[in-house]
Structures are given as structure tokens and as C-alpha cells.
Length: 160
Ligand SMILES: [Zn+2]
Ligand SMILES: [Zn+2]
Image (cartoon, rainbow, N blue to C red; front, side, top):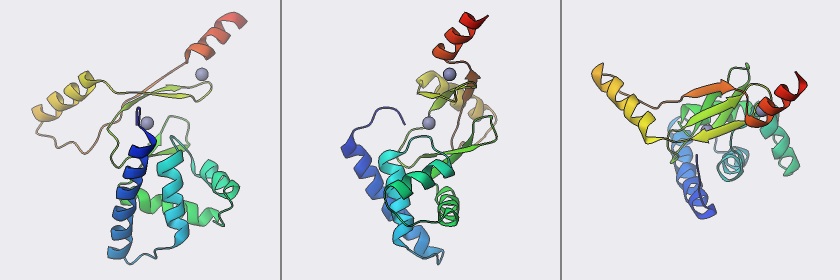
């Protein structure tokens, strides 16, 4: 996502909410308050998260949601293009809000799982050049770079 203000987050949530509402209506899915509470939590507070962490957070917020509701809502949100699912190389699916957020890339620490985002115009240019060359229509891109973060790297060089 890269830097955003609370106001921007609220605006995006509002747009995402409308999109979700329309999507649920046109697919004859139920518009339950739980589903909107999940969307709100994701758009206002969550960055890169997994289903279990979201479930725990919703419980802490005193929402009565089941795991089934969490999983099912995440699936709908992916289909509706409001969140993206990432596999950061550890078999665990992490999600992140995507509506109104620019495509960006990730540095993923394979030791502590920390994720750092970056957004570089040069990457966008490379994506554009190569896709144009092949007449390829890009939906989105996601570049993940795996390794050790500074902290984990420092720790591992001390212990040798
Ligand atoms: Zn990200
Ligand atoms: Zn690390």
C-alpha cells in the first residue's frame, strides 16, 4: 500500500464498501453485517494478514464471526477484486486490501516473515515494456524478493 492517511483509508473503505455491496447484490449473496465488518477491519486496520489472524482480531473486537464466515468472506472479497491473495513462499496465504491501492512489490524475510513494501517506477516500466512487447494485457503485477532482513542477517552472522 505505501503511505496513506486515515482520511484516505476511510475514503477507500467507503468505495470498497459500495463495490462489495453491488457485488453481493448482483451475485445473490447475503449482505450480512459480519461481511461488512470484515471488510471494514481489513480496509482500516489490516496490512498483510492471514485468515487466522483476522479471525482472532475480529473476536477481540467482539464480533461474532465464525471461521467459516471469515474464509467464505475472504473468498468473495478476492472474487470481487477487493483483496489480493499472496503466497509468500511459506504455504500460508496472506491477503491484502487492493482497491485503490497501487501495485507494489515486497521484500520478504524468510526467517521472521517480515514484509517490507516498495514501489518503484522502474519496476512499473519494466512490466509495461515486457507486456507491450508480447501484446500482453496486465491485470496487476506482484514481485516478491526473498531473503533475510537486516535484523535476521545480523543475528545469523553473530551466531556463526
Ligand atoms: Zn503489500
Ligand atoms: Zn527477518
